[in-house]
Amino acid sequence: MSTMTPAAPPVEPSAVFPMPSVPIAFADGDRYEWPDTGDVWVRSAADWIPAPDDRSGFLSDAEVRASLHRAVVQWDVKPRFVPVVPGEILPGMRLHSLLDLLHLDIGGARSVAQYVRSDAGGKLVPLRESVAEHAEDFAYDVPGTVTYSDAVHVLDVILAEQLEAEVSYDAAAGRLYARYVRHVAGWETTMLPQTVECLHVFMLSASPAEA
Image (cartoon, rainbow, N blue to C red):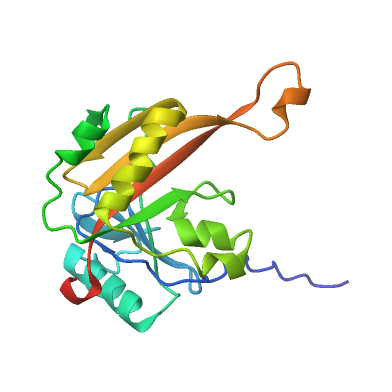
């Protein structure tokens, strides 16, 4: 009789790129992950708790921020920061126009990192990492961060041109949210239009030297 050993769960591959930047703020539900080892911490009530909680101790915002800073500076692709996916109602203050965007107080933010919902698993991933899922060579031309002015332009286009667009700003979490729906390619050949919901999260960030 043969003996079978249960197979170990597959390890999620490392990202192509390191963290694009260090967020200026965190929110409960954010995740700090090391896919190569399977280690995960989830932020709850300002502490980072192991998942599952093995009672090995918590991490602080300062410790997570320092680790992410090292990853940015040293081009280390192993650790990941995964922003929490918002619920049905976008957090923070609803924004309706370019004027609203231009009058926001973004504090000490020096850059903005754009995250989008990944096709693989639905997590939020940096934009260039999402591009790399489909075309790695092209992703090297996608900047890790953009200026706030560039982010405002993208958000203004979303508000003006996308279906069911909604944008909000959560000052405590240091991030802007944009959600809308778009038609799926080829829907014209079906009886009814097919749509997919798109989610963008713009993380206000410090430059690496300031993190």
